[in-house]
Length: 401
Image 1 (cartoon, rainbow, N blue to C red):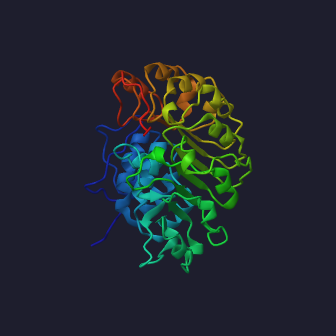
Image 2 (image 1 turned 90 degrees about the vertical axis):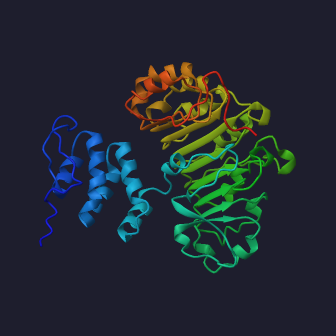
Image 3 (image 1 turned 180 degrees about the vertical axis):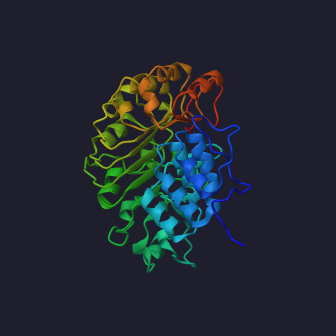
């Protein structure tokens, strides 16, 4: 029996013409998939992706090619189809595709209380708790969680090959972790992680010292509070330095002070693509205002910035009103207001801004919008993420204590 891949099968979809298909004839086989992937309609290309993997190597290559589709939704669908596959060519492509992917943030919901959220993947690597009895295995594929076993960890034969590390201790980690041994570290997390510990009980670390010690970092995620100087050394020694490789900076906190924001903005980060600040509430040190964010709105501070997350804010409406009149709205691709108090007033400003339609993603999850406004925002020519919403009258940021 011959196996002709160009013959229609039961899972083949129809090929449309100038509009999404309804009653058009079935065009099956891998040729049909190729034609549908060339359609100007994203929904047709999305349906074709689901069929492509039925055609073995040729279909797999079509999905890999779709990682560079013009539609964010198609790129995300292709990534989701590939990220758990074991073929060597897929693993190689994903390693080169992105050093870290926003889908990790979008696809992993925050846990109850938004306090010590854990990850299944970090820096596009599988998260695994370091066990001294087992040691390090497949370091290129793992992001290790580490706390009190620092000395043993640093003695591991393969430790110099570790590229991603989740450090859940409460020490000055730049004094403990050896940059000579961990010279290949590209992604680092510091703060409360998978333990019963409030986010406000741990001060965020001085990131300038971390960046100075680890010049090869591409991703830095710190979690903690701001008004906790009794538990950690103050940031009085902050260094306004230049770091050539950092692409992702994420600060998760229940309250981020204006002095810290000013320090972040004093850094020279020419490679930075992803900036995510959880602004929080004044009760936990979040005493910033819209004036403190003005430097980022110019679009000149971090020239390669494509993701701007001003999350967990109590003045999200003011942020929306300012950003629609800024230069940065014309250069970023992802705008994230999630966890904050964005209401219909701020959303109206977004709707009235033509440049918003140039975004790939607008994240308004866990804000304070009415159902009617969410539906209006979904009519924009962008992918709108609105998984959950607070009651419109409940104006607060989600993460504080």
